[in-house]
Length: 118
Image (cartoon, rainbow, N blue to C red):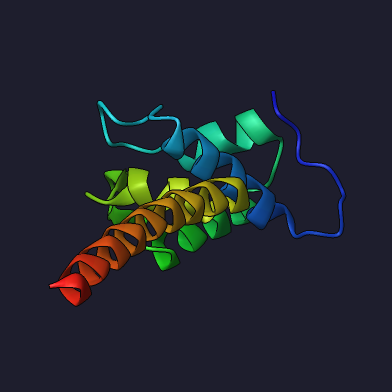
């Protein structure tokens, strides 16, 4: 059981962050189904309201959709979106983009230099 702790951050946000990490890690990739509210209550030691609000947060973030009586499911882009949701992953993605841009700028400088010589 991964209890939610008092950190000053609302419990539903803590549960949503834990679920986001699990989504980013590919834990629900095969079934695309998120845990039920009862499962979230048992896993995180929270009330049904907190569990429901955590799922609502994932829906607001575009990671999940819910179907009455069937539960909550991941959206097609949930895994990529979840990976970018964490600051560490967002920074890593920005670093990759920066490295690519630096390489492209270096290539463009070389091409301009060659054209100016002609």
